[in-house]
Length: 496
Image (tube, rainbow, N blue to C red; front, side, top):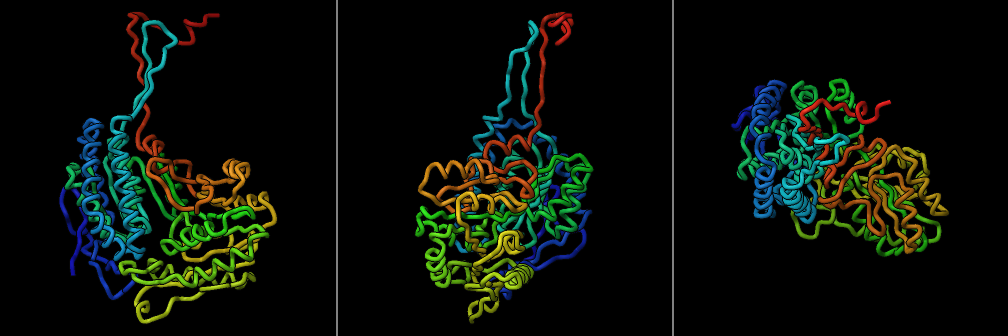
């Protein structure tokens, strides 16, 4: 069995603890991909010390030259797209079509980041004083701690690491314990593209140990975390106490609304993809389906037939629609919420159990599940499950649908199916989410647009697009006075 290492201080090294954990295929738990470091705080200390040295070198590299490195990363990802998609599916389960999309998002993000090396714009503005210039520009911050989840093993790290590097920061990277192989290959590609070794550090291990050590380290200047709202709250407390810059991307309880004038067949295609793509393990997954009374029964009947026809299996095999959930703990969480839904009186229409069968028995498979007559305000309707469970809520009017959408603690993504342009624009204004789709499901980010949510989904920052570069850089203002005399703004210009 292959034993993998951390990348710290320019070398691939064993963890200081001497301990490792097994990385297994969730579609077949007898398939062990390799053993990865179960690192400790000493490993984080070494990584941060090296990253500080890397920062001193990298921040002096011109931003367009930093972009050139990221362009090469994009080229390498494109060349190895099929290989990386295959290893990613083996590691976390979603079908190859989805992992190919994951890699492509990384490619798109690389090329977009490369171009931003020539667009780290500041502002030059008129001074209120004579013979004086006033301007702002962007500066790097320091060592960035990057902590990422399992569901997008390549795309989410690229969302965070590419803009961090482009802005001139160095990085200490901890991928989720369930997807360490993808994280390792990603770092290998960064190095192959010419990134100075001290600029990137890779430390594998448990979130409670390695993740906490990164967040708490006094020489980590900024942190970007994607994960649960509960863990994000802990990260936020620590970063707030230590005055660190922090970006949080956390949970969602996303709703797709279909009104009576919506295209039912299009909506069914959307909810199948939105609710059961990645086995429901997306922060943007369609977890709630809000149906207006007039189309409720017809749409739900057709949807159940389609869901029952979905094929579960190994994502690397042709014909697989849905792969496994990530681990046994995830299965047990889904099972708890199925019990909660039944106890709350919702109707279990399909699914609701672990998938059986000769080809599925070795993996973490759960049948796609639909509950109807779900009550607004119930736990099933309010709480994030992160699995293949869809809650259906009946409403009478568009206004009622908007109210149900907004009445959760999360605010990531929403979706509306309608043919009425006025209602569509009302939704864009009134739905309390960071993202709203019209006539499309709740998932599907594009690399050149900001991504993120409101309320307990995040803390106001955005991934992707142009806004993320503001998070990873600091504004500095410069004044150049060439008058040869003391000029006092606000005092000399406006004497009493």
